[in-house]
Image (tube, rainbow, N blue to C red; front, side, top):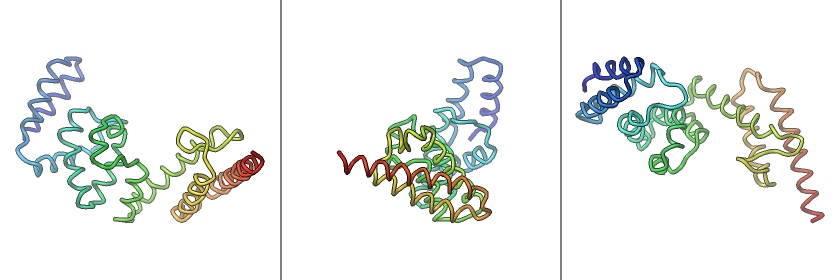
Length: 200
């Protein structure tokens, strides 16, 4: 491994020398001799959090993902949690996403919390759930979304189970009022849906 090449890559990229930066990045990736070397660099890279929504695809596909995949196969909580944190990269690379059974950010977080119920993972999982609930209700009162479609009766039940799970994670009751209001909306939507189906 030649970490100085990564620093050179960053410098070239920041000065707009893209073609040269790509050559140096390829050299940097080729400099790793083993998965163990990759693991050392990847852990430091992810803990520095120098990326925003997505990691440059070559770095993700050649360095980060192989390390996280190996950890995922061992049920290592750190690896599973970082698959959640890098889910935008996974969603953009079908073959990589397939290697982890097309799991979602939320599913990775739920597994990571099951493996290692730390405060950090609890807060991350709760935040992800709350963001998901905000998305689900953004077309209210027209309906409650599940994915990009209106929720079915069974999906409403799943959402209500997720609300109950979120309550157990919300130990400080920060989101208690929101969860109550959201639950009322889901139950109201479910009741309307049930009435429509019984009439139709």
